[in-house]
Length: 402
Ligand code: ACO
Image 1 (cartoon, rainbow, N blue to C red):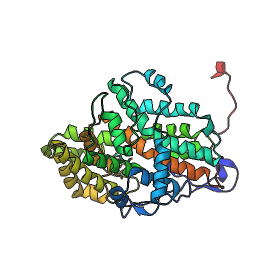
Image 2 (cartoon, protein in one colour):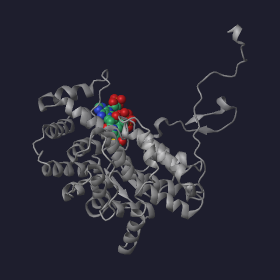
Image 3 (cartoon, protein in one colour):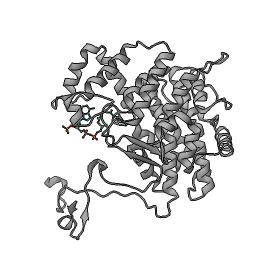
Image 4 (cartoon, rainbow, N blue to C red):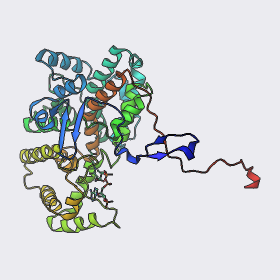
């Protein structure tokens, strides 16, 4: 807490909290985290129970509307979503404007932002129907956009949505099917995809969600707000960590090299960190990481990679780190990203797609949080203050006298 009297000539106090480690930016009823106990609840339901027992759209309904749907509500919601899975044909031209080797996250930022130019009927966010339409469209179109970004990056034709498939199966088909060939749905891989989506669907006021809320607090178009969230998620300290974790495991390469990397992670003069370890909020095992670890074993088993050397490195690294004084003292446990990279690779996704999948799933959380914010009658524009440490007032100096 800073006394601002000398700074601004007014009495009062500011809290100065870099990184917002202990400042609540809003009230929310959506997601609860107890970082010390390793608990994550969506609307009161434990994440492991949702990951095991619900479809992604069931969880999406819960996050958006606050309750698990009845059968009738679920069916109606599914119909509403599947009606909007297609993109306007004109959007294809946006894709073809990108370099063919563009990062799919860059494409996602652009395409989702461009949706704000397509849906003028989503501009009045005070209208509940427009809010609902924007939410449905965003959740429905995200898998199509993500799959198109992937297909574009590998030069294959786009595969259109198949709406009688479940959300996760439809997405995998749009990514991996090729025209004129059957695409068999593998139940183990589809279940893994569904779990990954559910685990990533929301995580209270993380950096990208706070970005969506802050952008939305000015009344901005919801598609533009989600685009801002995608941009924030792209960073390696946030959504990019699963890619970094996999790269690190591949670099370590074999179990005998682990001690060298653990030593580096503890060396304060070395900027290296064990990627996939540590979390701002969890000072215990990330509950999502446990489900991710189980899912990783299932997927690797299903695709015949049970003896994958990278999985061996991951398991041994986890064992060594969890028994090391440094990691124990700093409460550094594996986070969700530690096993998700290996799993996504085994599912067939290239590393550039990892954060895209995260964005796809998190869109539900972003939309739910955005909706909660704009529906709150006490909502005001987000406007953080600063602790000014620059020059005090001084007279202007003409250029010739400087
Ligand atoms: N390896 C080694 N040391 C670490 C690690 C790590 N992965 N993470 C934190 N530490 C150390 C820090 O050096 C620091 O030590 P110090 O107290 O001696 O200075 C201490 O633990 C606390 O770390 P902070 O960086 O202050 O913690 P913060 O909450 O700011 O950062 C973060 C959390 C960014 C996740 C950090 O743990 C990290 O960089 N981890 C690796 C990247 C990663 O896995 N990110 C994914 C996060 S989950 C998600 O976004 C879905």
